[in-house]
Length: 215
Image (cartoon, rainbow, N blue to C red; front, side):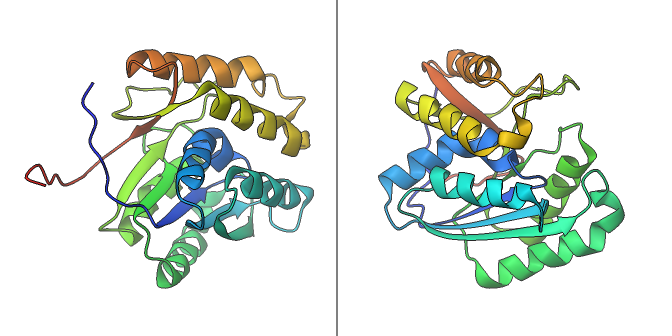
């Protein structure tokens, strides 16, 4: 397993189609980054759930995922499951975010995701954040769309435990869903850890990057 450093990360953009996407797909990575870099600037944009109880869940969870960060959260009120029909509003929201953010890293859904809302956001993100390292996170679900990721962020057991605890603490609306369980989150993290010779990991898809092998 070859590790490549991404350079200093001072500002992050995290994109989610739904409340809980960011925390499920990249919560451990955010916890790791924020612990290493107090004061990290994090911009989070979530497309659905605005004005509902889910928005409150999301704001609380993202605060927990980003301790000591300079956090900016926007939750839109677009309809769940219909983002492709609201393409223009999603695109404009991304462009507005780009106007106030200069991220070193973008966390977003990945293009291989079977959910239409996730996939649209994954397709639009690089049209706005064109020159930024974008990591496409994964979310386990019944579709069976987990693929072969190309990048891994190892997680300590303590960080993974913290991630799973905050998911259950903040997303009360999801606790009755059969896929939303400790075993799901631990199982996927353990599998991805095996694939990168770590105990646990979150995995990401990278469509494009540049190398600076000469340092």
